[in-house]
Length: 105
Image (cartoon, rainbow, N blue to C red; front, side, top):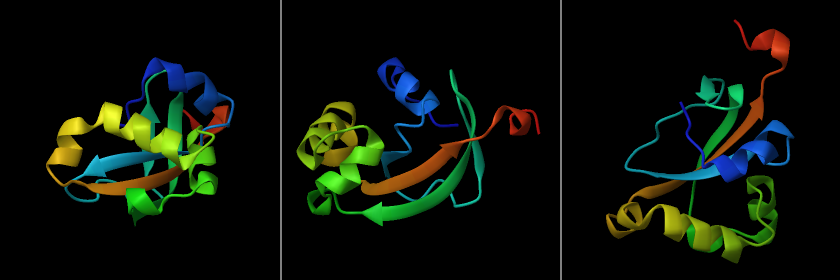
């Protein structure tokens, strides 16, 4: 299951947010995996890549729903201060919301 703040749910449902950056000690998801987002439904994980936050570009940030990489980094720092302090790795999870006919499988 992937949890998101409520403010991100409309963008996910509308297909404007198709990835998320998560800070984990180790990779917790894999490409091809189905997962669930409460308030949205089932998704298909397309890719899971380890990334360096300082290397993210504006183009990397836009599928995450942010105009710039700096805005994305600010949000990550706000959401994950303990994980950043503990040295967790950053993973970019690219996903797509499954169509209604795929939601019940």
